Structures are given as structure tokens and as C-alpha cells.
Length: 529
Image 1 (tube, rainbow, N blue to C red):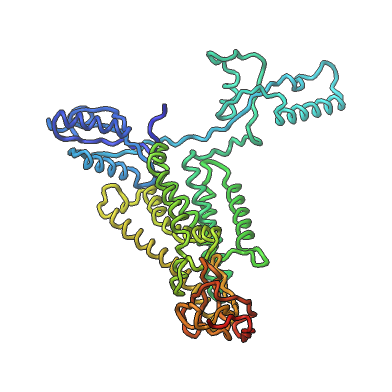
Image 2: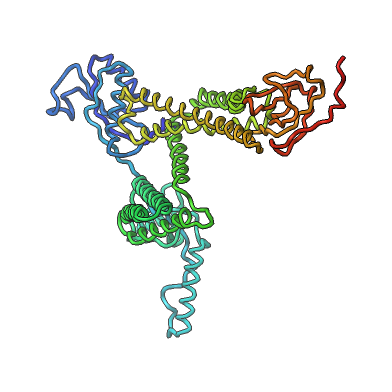
């Protein structure tokens, strides 16, 4: 069974002061954290003899501290933070006296497939004179053998890794518990031809350099997009910055391999840069990306990546125990209880209730998705927090006391801004509605709410018309929100209020716009008692 996951391993010389029970407690919490103790000795003895003064109340532990995060110049410092955090949590006098990173970056070995060589033409020519035709047949046979080897027709299924000479020796080695070396075999690389003059960097080091190249090229594309939006001197300024970004990426690409491959890496970097410029900046017919779109895409990518960095250390048990029910409760409450939040804001600004609008359920769900999209910007702060924790920023260290208040204040600010965005959505819709009412034009719809110009014909005498909020003037058209719950809601533009009346007392006749004059035949109206 695998132990706890981690990214970095740092050997820390931890000094624990106290008595035997304190040292036993320290060993217990080390084991709980999954930090193996390499060795332990009294202060002033063992490796610390002549380095630290002897102290009977102090004991030194060489502990391998394991934790998540990137490998940078603050990794050893982050290990010391975790030791200090543990000391505060368990109430022990514990100090990190020395922190040293354990370098376990993996080497990238070339993979080889083993194949037989019985199909190859014999090297020694047949006895007798060698004719031109014989040499030609031998060349054809060698070419066919090489082609068939590259296509894998003669593979044995064995796979080895290492340099070319190591791979050949490994393939012919008698492995205990394996098959004995029988037929003559040779090796071929997994992909293409093996280039012994190119030595790749170690795995994590190569990944970091590749990410830096991508970052430089994306910065170049953004500067080129900004230059495309400007004119005059600013074009040349942003273009020069884009060129500098490309030079930075090419410089990193030049050292992408430990040995060799420098010219090829720079050429590949140039080709990738040209493709990015063609896709994002040089596209025609209005398909080129704007700087705002690029920043939005970056924000979405940073949010997703930061949230992943933040929660990747959570175990499946923690997810199932409390995170998954919490997320489910939040989503359900937003969809069920908050499905009409935007409609409620819209209706409240017009003096009606959401029930008077009679919005279909599909549009309520759509407004809920819109509300969640507005609130999703609040995830940007925890995403940045996750990125900062991954790179071991000092202001998010486990021992920084102002980190949590700073996070809470920033998160509250972003949530307030997101809430104001939701309010602005309804406010802009109400302003568009009022503008259309003044201009007597058709107003825009808002998540299933589609006001229409209607002529309102009473079906009862005026004295018996149960209107609320104003007096009906049948000769003028009204913006109608439709019928809901047996009530018709109308917007009275001159008064700036909503009028409501029973649906059975009026008849709605569609009008072309708000400038027409409504005429009715009142012969159908019943006479007074």
C-alpha cells in the first residue's frame, strides 16, 4: 500500500528540547505526518560533535520532511516552515537547524525494443568473385532488413532502456529468473533514430524549462495582439516587447537539452511561435483574438490550474466525507433556491414579484447558470492562493499569521464584486426596459421575461375594474408581462409603476408598438345592474 503523496523531500536536522516524553511525542508526530526519521542522536554527539555544544535536554533528529509544492529556491525554507508549524500544533520546543533538499529528479533514459537479426544478409560475401549484381542484391537485402526492423516485424517483445551500448548489452544479458540469451539480437529506439549527441535534461528540469518556453511565447502572442490593436509609435513599442519575449523563449529553448540539440530546439521554438501568431493574431475575418479575450482565457486557465493545485493534496476520503456533500448542497441550493435571484432583482426594480412574471423553469435554470458564472469569478482568489502555496510564497506560509486574514478580506472583496455584477445584470436589463418603454419600441427579453405591447380591453364596466397600482386607460397601449396566477401585470410608463388587474376582467390584444392608439367596441360590455 502506497504512503502519503508528496512532491518534495527535504532532510531537516530537527532539534527537540525537553525530556524523554517530549522526544517520544516528537517521534510519534513525525510518524503521523509520514516523515521518516533517518537517524537520531543527542546534541553534541555523533555528527554534531564539535559543531554544537552538548546539552542533555536536547536531542537531534535527521528527518525527511515530505510536502507538496514546486522545487525552487524557497523549497528548503518551506520545509523549515512545516517543522515550525508542527511545533506550534503539538506544543513542543522544536527547531529546524538545517534543511537540505534531496535531489531525486529522474533521468530520461532512451527506450529500445529488442529484435532478432536472423533476417539480415550475411556480412561475409559468398566465396568467389563478387559481381555488381551480387553487391546490388546485398544492398537491397540490407535495406529490406532495416525497413522490416523499423516496422517491428522482428521484435521479440523485450524492452530495455539506456544508451545504445547499454541497451545492446542488457538485451544479451542472462537475467536470473528470465530467459537465457539464445538467438542473436539487436535493439532499435522507440521513435526514429537514436541521437547519441543529444542528452536530455532530467525529467522535472526539462518540464520546468518547457513551461518557461510556453510562458515566453504566450507573452509574445499577447504583446503582438496588443500591437495589432494600436497604431503609431505604440505599435513599435509593443512589437519590440514581443520580439524580446521571443528572444527570451529562444534563449530558454537553446538550453533545453543538457548536451546537443540546441539549433533544433531554437528552430522548433520559432515554428511554434509562428503557428501561435498565425492562429491568435494573424487570423482574418475577425477571428483574431483580442487582448481582452486572451486575458480572459488566461484567467480561466489560471483559475482551473490554481484550484487543482489547491485541492490535489486532498484524499478521496476527504472529498467523499465533506467536500462532495458541501459542493452538492451549494449547487442544489443555487439551482433550486437561487434560480430566480436575477428574476427577483429584475421584478423588484419594476415593482412586481417574480410570481407575476411567470418565468418557465428552463429559464429559471438558465438564470441560475448565469448567476453561478458570475459568482465563479470568486474562485480566482483561492486559485491564486493555491498557486502561491505551490511556489512557497512567504505570505501564505503555514507560520504566517496574517495570511488567513488577508485571504478572507480578499475573498470577501471578490464576492462583493461578483454580487455587484449580478446586480448590474438586472439593473442593465431594467434600464433597457425603461428606455424601450419611453421610446415606444419593443423591449429586450431577460431570461424568459418577454414584455410585449398590448392593447387592454376591459370586459367589465370601469367602475367594477379591480385594478391595483393605477388607473387603466384603454386608449393607450401598455407593456404587458403576461398573465400569471390569474393576474395581468402592465407597465404604466407615464406613472413609472406597474398596474395589476384580474385576468378575467380584461382582454389583451397585441399592438404593433407603443405609438398606436387602441380602439374597442364597447357594445359587448354588460350593462350596470
